[in-house]
Image (cartoon, rainbow, N blue to C red; front, side, top):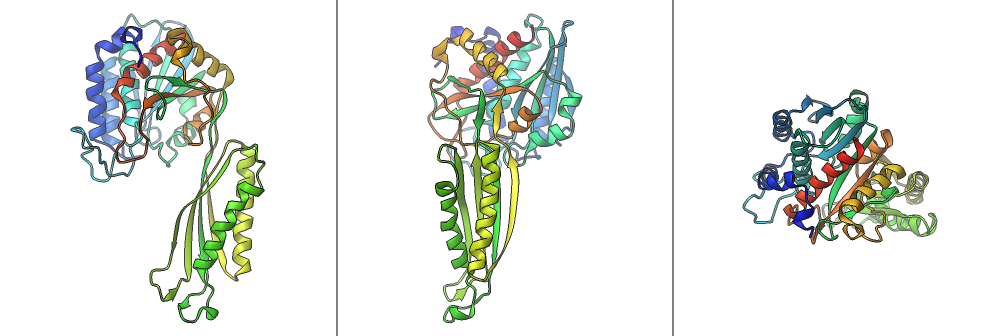
Length: 388
């Protein structure tokens, strides 16, 4: 773990308050576009620190703006605020008070870290000149809050020369920073398939078109796409996460539903997957005399870091922590992030901070408070390097 002497002193001085804030957010999670209390708290904190506060972008989004000196450079830092629909099972004394809602991805820590940095950067002795835009985004988890903020004019209302964000990442050493230029995370699309057959009595299958059987063949056939259609040098994922058909053993189902998660690093492979999935599903249904309805939801594009901004982000980390502060041999991640919409609209970089052991999106996850001052200190270092 990072030596305390390397942390920004002003961040360390207020660490207990930042941890208390993070744990308060953890105990009071709110789902996407429902972050009313969270955004109120964020707005109150930013206002108290001296930021000009703007509300309502993306529904519950908050943007805090601070300008110092006469220089015209503009920097955006983003944190996501929403929780997940998961019932917490950590047993922590600050566990979620909301049934079926939990900060199971660490957005409570992302918000607290950016607020901690915001507090320090508002001090008179903070060493930067220019405009700092702190973006607190709603609805990252599957709802595309970043896309909505961009579409509602985020970078027109708050122009940025670059924008950055981080995510805590279990499975990597606590406090280590990881980043890559170019593609860093995969696209994420959702496909909902409804098979329309002809139901009937289980004793008379010859008079039916068995939707369950059709769905099963579709599931098997889908596995051939990555294995036989996509260049093996390219990453692609087709996961059938859910299948629903029938309710009784002696009734042949008239309908069946499949729900898929589809991922790729390359926009070209992403398009190829859509073409092949659609064609294959329709062909398999036709073989059995069934029909299908396909709802292909084009969701998050691949997350691509700007090379120049990534070099800057890396330099800030190594100047501060040395090469040993970085995650070595970092490779692209197969998860996805709606920060990709912001990076498609503005140059920037997305990075990770190791969270130690564990896994996100589980009932037992918790953000590691030991990395909170690391993330906050990094934001301070980045601002001081960019806004000079």
